[in-house]
Image (spheres, rainbow, N blue to C red):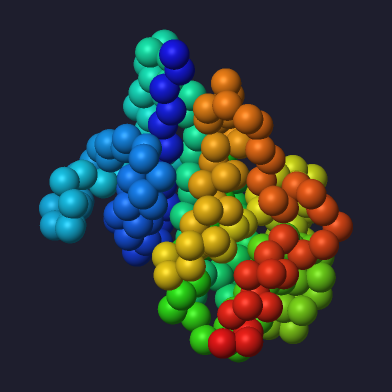
Length: 228
């Protein structure tokens, strides 16, 4: 019988410990047994027994690739969960930086990966409306909106090249994670389940967003919160 693992990663302050706490509680409410293992040597104080690891373990060292290989030998199906702080991502250039970090982890680890914008519950109504365009982005439109901030032609050319790289891969999309919203947590868990085919012997369910790729990924989520 297969087992399942999430490798939770992201920059410092991206909400890894909060994600682990709330996702464990959510899974336990669904009668799933979950254990969380601390891979972050800098984390000493948190409100549960263990937690996940910092991004440096995944992007700079071979040890995580070796760990994934060992988990797969033990018949674990492994999914990467890359977190970024939504409050950090409301500016285009910071968003590009977040995408490159997520893409780096995806290429390095070579496992399915779900990318998440955390702390959505801390955003203002205006910020939530602004961040919607970053969930399934058109990078060239974002670049056009921000090129006025670049005075150097050299940096404009470099930024355009980075956008081309992001667009060529077309692999990085983000899900909003609002720990105060049950539906938001369900959507994230559905995508992770889909990536690792959790409970494949049970009735198969695709993530809701796959039903209509042409529409905004989370129209319902944002409409609900705009009306609050």
